[in-house]
Amino acid sequence: QVQLVEVGGGVVQAGGSLRLSCAASGTISNLNVMGWYRQAPGKQREFVATITSGGNPLYADSVKGRFTISRENAKNTVSLQMNSLKPEDTAVYYCYARRITQNVSYWGQGTQVTVSS
Image (cartoon, rainbow, N blue to C red; front, side, top):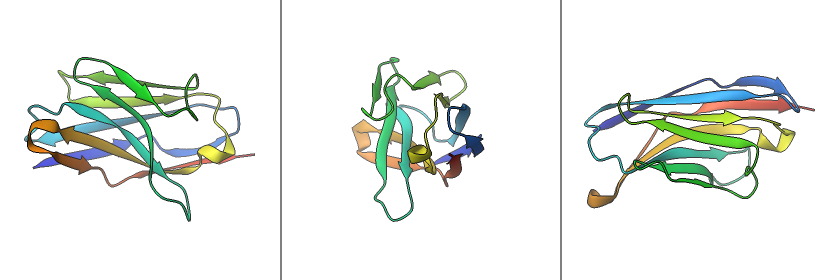
């Protein structure tokens, strides 16, 4: 099993910045992909950004140029630096990890990000 714990959510004004971090523990070998999804009230959970163990990032169009994902394999952590935040970025942000060989995904409990206008 894998446990994912997020930290770093909060309330920020539009145009501000926040940094989310997620630490993985448990059976953490071969977590090929780690990243972030988010879910706004009344909406489905959506992809934000992921990064492979080799360091290749992928971003949703809505966050490109504003968010930066990074990963430290030695520490089993993934972070999301969020700049130029907009009210539409308000959501619960979930840490995500996937072990491709076993076709298994893991989720954190979520952390609230609120951007006020």
